[in-house]
Image (cartoon, rainbow, N blue to C red; front, side):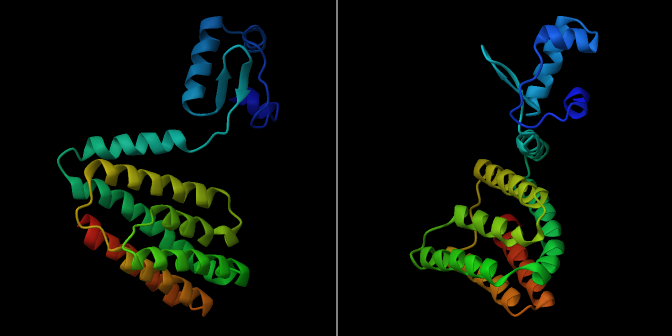
Length: 215
C-alpha cells in the first residue's frame, strides 16, 4: 500500500511485476503473493491473470460485504435488530447532512429531485415499490455537498440494509404511496429553504421506516 501511495499510482495503473516487487520491497515471492491477495480482497489491487496486477478502485465493497455478514451473524435470532442497527446509522448520517443540503442545494438539483419523486408517486399510485428510485433520490440529495465520500458511504449502508432486509424479510414494509409522500415532504421543505422542516421531514421518513419495517 505504501508503494502505491509513494509512487502516486492511480486506479487502473499497472503495478510492478512480482520480481520487481520482491526486489523493491526486499521480501520473498510468497510474501508478495500473500500481500497482493490480501489487497485484492480489499479492492486495493486487481489481479488480471495473464496481464498483470493493477491498482484497484478501493471501493467500499469490502465494507458492504463485511457489514452484511456482521449484521446477519450477530442477529441470527433477532430480525428487527438486524435492520434497526443499519437504519439507525443511516438516520444519524442523513439527518445531520440534510441541514447542510438545505443551504447548498441548487434549483436545478431540486428539479431533478422533483423528477425522481414524481416517478415515485406514479409507481406508488400503481402499488409498485421503487427501491432504485429511493436509492437515486438519496444519492442526488447530497450531490450539492461536493463530497464524493458521502454518496458512496450512504450507498454502502443502503446496500447493506437492502441485503439484510432481503435475507430477513420485511413483512410490514411501508406502502409505496406513503414512501413517496415522505420524499415529497423532504423536497418541499428544501424548496422553501426550511432547514428545520427538511430535518423534520427526514426524521419522519426514517421513523416511519423503523415503525413499519423494523420495529
